[in-house]
Amino acid sequence: MLSNGDIMIEADKWNALIRVFFVLIVITSFSDIVADVLQGANVLHIVQESVVFVFALSLLLLLFLNTRAHEQRNAQLLVDLEEAKIHSAQASEELVSAKRMFGEEITKQFIKWELTESESDIALFTLKGFSAKEIADFRNTSEKTVRNQLTSVYKKSGTTSKVSFTAWFMEDLW
Image 1 (cartoon, helix red, strand yellow):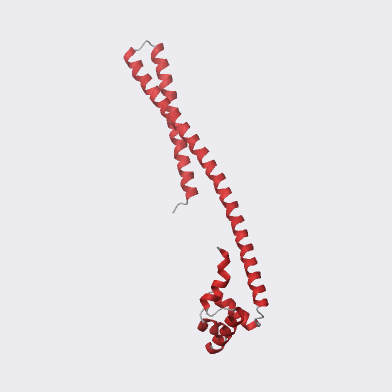
Image 2: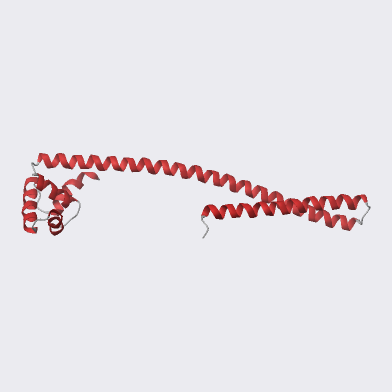
């Protein structure tokens, strides 16, 4: 299967071949017209050959103009693509920075609430959306232990549930 780059190369080859074909028609037509005029050929025949010459020359000109327009458009698309890559990289860096700062603020708040290390781990898993059972599985402990620690986290944070605990951190983001 051909990639986009291969298809463009194939299209360029065909475009070049068509241009060569029309150049040959233009040259041949022009030489034939000159030869016919020098030999005193019939005017109708010269007019017919001139029509073919003008038609081929017009198509060749249109082909060159079309190719030039496509080259300019492709060049602009490459510039736009590079700008999009730069913008995307900047946005990614900003997102990484924002995530890091948010994580630092969460840690500071856990310290203010005087959460133990285990409570902090469980609170973080809770903020990430994990259930008590999933947290228990991660920590190789019982679900009851996790629920007891969550109760302690909620009490220290002044919240009453997973939803209100998570909302406490999300509230000021918007």
